[in-house]
Length: 248
Length: 248
DNA sequence: CGAGTAATTTGACTCACATCAAAATACACA
DNA sequence: TGTGTATTTTGATGTGAGTCAAATTACTCG
Image (cartoon, rainbow over all chains, first blue to last red):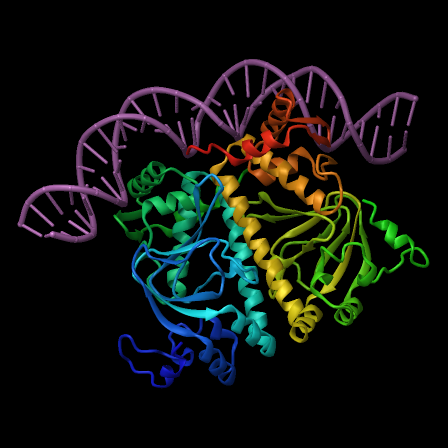
């Protein structure tokens, strides 16, 4: 709507930072692009849509018109089964692209909801597709992101079908840790963006089980947890834990 | 099983049926293309690679150079965890495209193995990407297939984390049924391409559980099963079963 | 700040499915 | 066509995590 505004980028809150100057450009779509291509991308992006905690970014079955890049905050996506149950399919952090599971379909395959106050860039898909076929690197990058998402989902399937509650939670903590790390944040001390309930749902566990495992990990000196504040005390032990029983 | 009839009508054995005359063109890549585009696709496809049962089409971590379209037979893909366990991530039937989880990466994210004698068309990715640049419809179609695969995997996650053994197996049988149907084969009487073991692995169950559920279904008059030969006797009941407990 | 509500934790009990063991079939191939 | 191997089935038993219930702690907002 207002892509012309981004001409001036000020180190100011609420400023419309162009892709070129966005601190996430090394994680997000611009990653693959040279400067001139980035300008074109810039023009189709609607910046700074803000979502409050709990607010939906899009809803399953609603018309699909845009993907969203997370700028700050965190998003969860979930699918609702015919019997009405929710299954969280992913957590998205700054730099991640949300909505790829609906690419080239006309309705959303999932629901996306903000876990905290979150700002996103909206990228209309028709324009993204147009750009992609004049910009080979962009097409390549989208293929890459989508295949990455397939792989993530396969990893989740492995976790769900092969691992114990402890292994799943250790794996999730380590995954979050490495994602924070890639964003230049502490990999050992961070704040969980999601509630225990969401962790439980994502990992196919009961909330009570998640809670119990957290306290068990704490008692074993693997982590320190106060609410959402998490400190990974013994990463090596967590890694061994996450691997599961290696003799199997 | 018998789309090979089309192959036969071309001169000499090992005949290269063009995409244009392939009976699977309405399921496979050509679906999205007009005649002139299809010719170009045709030129990059290596036809009629044959795999015997158990033979690997590609292996996890091996260099990724091609996707494969299944012509006849069946393929399973699986990922191997660091602890050496296999998780089957999908079953692929004629018309399906295998290898999308590795698109735009340089190594395969999974292993693909033939469940029975299988023939495939090999499509080099670099050429596929090049074609996609110049053919918007092809690009669009690939996006579509990849997002479809993300969704399939999400569905699997739902199954693994929310459903009982009976519900999972009912869902799998119905999924196979509809896939046979789309290929103009009987939706109520078919031969399972995979062993009980593969079903168990895919659905995150023990073989013994799969076997027990099959006999239970048979005793309840839902199916008739003799080895891999399956007849769906009461589809409605299976559908209700697959939905899971609706009051939850 | 304090009341009301939501999120998290803890405990007691249950059960669906895994595991272990072994028999019954099916299948490959000499 | 028979023999050895792999697959499938059936039975007995154990357990990890779910469920139900209730206390505790953390938030929200007037």
